[in-house]
Length: 275
Image (cartoon, rainbow, N blue to C red):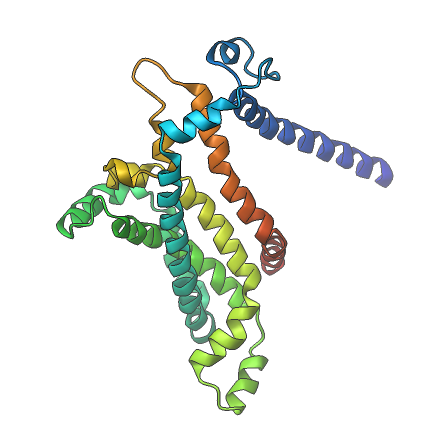
């Protein structure tokens, strides 16, 4: 009976994995193959392989939407925001984990995560207007940091609490300051957490559409998401160019994940053990 139940659970898990794989692969295949089809072929055969591979659509999408400039804008916003998120998030998590009872404070950070951005949209827009930060990269970076910092601190604090304080006690005996203890001893041990923070935040910031649409109106400040949106017109949509731009926009995130994959998996495993 135990073997039969285990076999049944295994079969069910395989079915769920296959179903989830299909849900993931089918839209991805439509995007990848659709980027290499003409508009007529895409309408007649959206899922199958292209009969004539339209590689020129990538070049056309790159030129028509000024994707190189949009790529630079997206990279500037994402990388700068990630840098400050790692610095601020790690720095804030250390005293929260070591000098306070974390449980009451965790609710404040969870509330910051759960509050929809739309509730703060209008007052935030008025504030940014008064500060002359509309249509500036600095303004969007401030917003990205404010929106992403609660989750970043929440993740870092859980990892810091899992690190033994014996290393810090030994460093205190050697006369190390709190600043030196954190950056030279604790922070290097947070590499899995940092990889998790970078991957999770980079995906959300890189793919952000709403904030940049609201606060970056100038053409020269367009990010990749706004550049792709330029192919969607009032009476027609050039889906082949949209799909080509989507494929190009996925490449940087795939590279980031491949570089940080091992540390990211370690971070998820450590988080699961702590949970």
